Image (cartoon, rainbow, N blue to C red; front, side, top):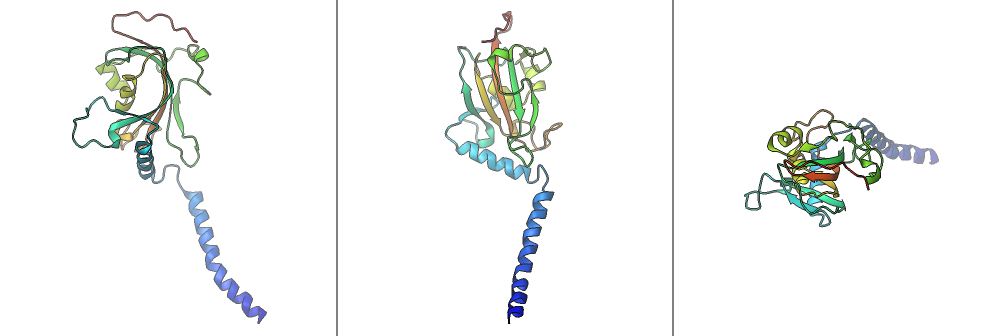
Length: 213
């Protein structure tokens, strides 16, 4: 009788062991960016529903544009507000530093960092110590340079920031690199930028030397 019980128990448990093994195998073989569009779409829906984020419409549209969706906005977590009184205009120049990353994925719980001009936690005291490089040099936010160097979402953020502002900006892939992606950035990626504005000046003005806090 005991032997019969063991046989019945084995018959019941064996299929379950197969299910557990199958789930484990699927977890191990899951790619870094599997179901990436779905994950980013879900992430965007959560951003749009979160009232703690500042919501800014892309500069290429206005509130009267028909058919606006969550993907027409960038979402901002204001980390620090500066002492500047003017936002950067489309023709202004901006001195800034940033870190760009993706949403959390299998291997990168805090999001894969694809580019950055500062290391570790941001510190104004060392922001001006960065070596001169293309991503740190003053960049004019003009129609020529902005459209060739930045995404629509990044440009939207710059035009709403003042000197001393530090924002964490969430940019839908529709305002970033779209379905195709770019370089190390896969398609359908929401781009997350931590941006700090060191200075803003108008065409014809001479920017004074940057002084860290």
